[in-house]
Length: 310
Image (cartoon, rainbow, N blue to C red; front, side):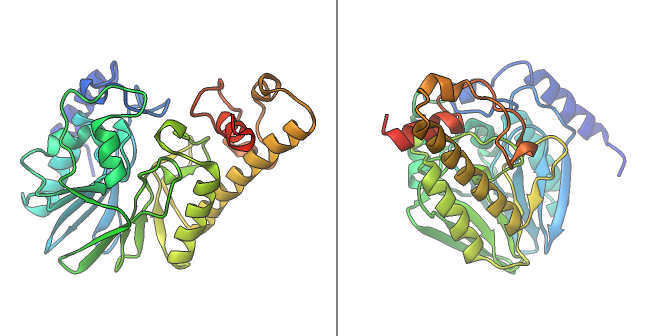
């Protein structure tokens, strides 16, 4: 489909927004490429009226059927508005019945404000809602549409001929991650539980744990089947933002590899600084590329702290 004038205006607004972090995400944990990363507005249907939207920030999932509209995550305000306009075109102007947030990070929730007066309900894990109000290590957002419905283990709802289930399997990328399943479509939105062929952000300040993440990925695959299609929060350059359970298990193996690598370096007598200086790609996982500068959310740093208790 050829780009419309609305597409052009949305892209222009995003380009302007790419020059700064929106005020609504002060202190939020935003992946390195989220700010300044501009791609055209794009809706991609997967099956049974479930699809994903990409523009700037964490991948948005959506459902538009005869019974209603659901959205998973919201990127930034300008991108959320572009998404809302596209969904309105597809739904005949219907409001959004439910907006779900997979976790609290700003590149997945800052766009919530664009849904004010449009989304009838906002759902998130209770810990994600708490982190949205007071981001660990950061300042509360200046303006935000917070969840009005929270859960601890599971939340579900029927929307038209689809059943949506949000599950929390434990601490992983944060302490409030939700796996969102569109059961009849057999499509699952992973949020930032899934970084595809890209070094993940591990938000230890918000309760992240590599060991927990490994278990959550395994549990998620065990909960679904071989036909499940997963929507990923982020992907490396030239890699898709959807995939299979094998991709989830690939990230699981990468996280195991990080812990194994760091454990071996500790046993070899290397200091923390020496280990953190080793930025070459992890052997067996070269497609992830070199590690960046060590920081609090770096997998190597978090692995060292988990193993040593530092």
